[in-house]
Each structure stands twice: as C-alpha cells, then as structure tokens.
Length: 124
Image (cartoon, rainbow, N blue to C red):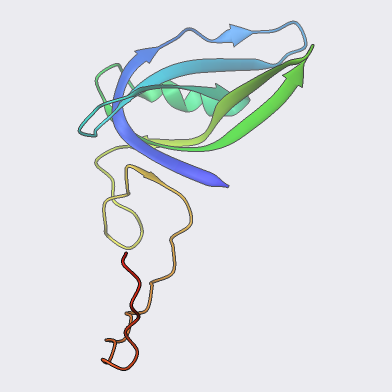
C-alpha cells in the first residue's frame, strides 16, 4: 500500500554507508496540516541520491511505503520513500495531491427518506 505526504523538508541527514555496500539517507518532513507533524523517512540506495537536489526548507511531495520487521523480539516500522518530488508539482489529473492518502473510498449512496409507515419507535 502506497502513501503520500506533502510538506516542508525540515532536516536532511548525511548518507549512511554500510560494509555490505548498502546505503541510505534519512530526512524529516513537516506536514502542512492544522497540527503539523514531523515525520522521518528513509531513502534507500539510489533513491537517496534524489535528495541531493533539495535543501532544507523546500516543499516536497514524498511517496512512501510502510515497512515492518521483527528483530530480537522488538518490532520496528520504517517509512520507505520511493519517490521524492518538488511540492509545487501537481498530479497527472492537474490537482494537488492530498496530505496523506491511500486508495480512495467508494462513494456512499444516499439513504432514501423514511415514510411514516417505515419509521421505528426506538428511542435513539
């Protein structure tokens, strides 16, 4: 399941290199909500190179996946960023992306008005 967040790039960490050849770079985005949240993401391997074109304070749109794992009886969750774009870009439909989104919910059909014979006598 993919998610998306738009916000201001608050902190860029240095790239971490591991002996196996694996590398990653963490970054923090502050959301643009009524109550802003600081969210830490990880960009793995070549995705970390996308961060080189941004500086702290830029508005970005981050598409990410949730990753979970267990290690020595402890459970960990990572937000794995797989695309980082400038925040002023619009989606293919020409609309601004939602703050945090997943698959859209189908519309709910309207309820028909109750006739007096269908009304119940429940007190709530």
